[in-house]
Length: 297
Image (cartoon, rainbow, N blue to C red):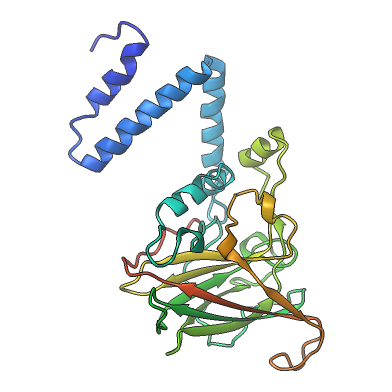
């Protein structure tokens, strides 16, 4: 097609893509072109701004490596990851508020850990945390044999792959629910932390005068054949950044009660007070068991 004016460009591109055999590919790409072209028209995008945008996308790729995924981080700080998560986790059983974005730090092959075991794999500062969880189906029946990945940042605000002072796989573990759908473990109370700001996403946050912090939380990923994979987080209720999470990941259902105890009574013999406990329940709905692509190695 010979292009006579800017109004013709969008239709020409969509027409050129119309022979794609995959109908979902046709639908997605046509919508992408329509919205991207409409965006350029709405903001009257200049050539200089267009070049800056392309340079920004290139910088995202250049900042991504085996231990850091800048593309996931970019999607997170735009709220896009949370939006996609909530769009795909509706009101069938586990409501949309029971799921959360995966984040950029999940790793495959976390160490298998016995129920009640510790995910501390190197000396880690912070008060002890004892977590007791239960997973049930949409009817409230316990689900046995769920593989549950747990991961968190240390109280210094770094995941172990970011920190040479932590052992490999520190504060990560894989559990299996028992016949009552329960799993438990020992850790340290999580703390809030800043997302990485050394790359283009950090430049964007600074330009927008936004803080880079996430409120304190634990990550969970539940996997069992016959059930939709559950990816979620449980936040500390007292964290003062719940309202301003840089990745917009806090929903009401995900705020947990981390109870402070001033004694060393069981199950914390030998643990200096204060210690914390968290009791929390998850719901998994029927569906396809599918693991996400790990954002880092």
